[in-house]
Image (cartoon, rainbow, N blue to C red; front, side):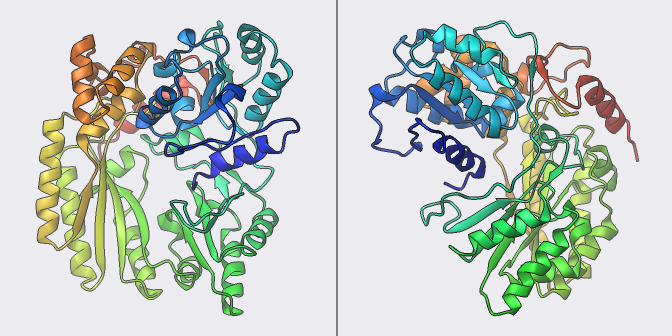
Length: 482
């Protein structure tokens, strides 16, 4: 209920003539449309382990997991979203077709084709779909499938506001899409290149619409403050607040160069009590390796502005297990924290860490993860040393991140594996047990560093920037030594 892309696609399809559509979630108990009246099922696939809920849905509705095993009378089942766009191969036997890239237009096109050919055999419908740019039909030979990149000609916003959503009663609107920073590990950046901005006037019109129904506003974008008129958006909201309106406005995170009084003051006035800054690594060397060109001086300036604007704390995000990382880089996280605590004695900071997961179609897709033993040692060290400094620390599960990496760099050999994982209960032990049952070497997908000339399962996706650029960028980044 807080997924902007999901709700916007629902809205677009709902506006088509002759199409009846219903939203269904993993906890939906009853539906309005009877099962035998359904001709098409679309699934939003956002996180790698979502397959567990997808299989639960298929089993509950008595659909075979594999497309080839479903009945001719069963509806076509398709999927889209970040997981599918990045690497659809582990799921090629599950879905009848898949949407690669931005889905606003092509989802509508797919529904229209299915509507026009609703009385035709499945094979005829799939053949027609396979000719559409951005649609991957595994049962038809498609040497290349182009990832779709859409111009932001409109401001996408929340069409449904609900107190049952993860962000209750919140009007979310997309200000920009993509990120020009291009961190070496970041799927969100590379998958959404080039960075695109919504026109200022359309943002304001959408804000005005949302504020008719709620006072909670959330601005969405991977590099939101890079919008050329983001300061003007802040001024507009601040003017309405100064005029007596009670508006709560939040943003997901700020770039360090956007920690300026005009922006932070507006966010504080709009009720944002905490700000987050993704520093990713403790040492400047490692930050340069991942293309996060952030200096310690810039971090201090961001804290100065936060204090100046009345904030009492900040959360930092970091990542451990990055390519070329060494113990000195880990120790520098502690040293940096110590210097911050000494310089800003009454300012609270906390850390949230995740472990590196290689993602398809990024410069770091070739690099395997650290071993669990190494990551545990780094995690324990950071928790112990940062606790001494009075800093709260949370770290993602290295075990779950390991299996996320398996799926992220997986191929079609993993289809039976993920089905077995589901049948074994879907808990962390099920992943290990299923691998042993089927003889799957999960370390190959998660831990092994690949050669640059290796053929990768997702190479058939025509994406920009292409593989040659990713190789050159990867070599450039990991060659940085100071």
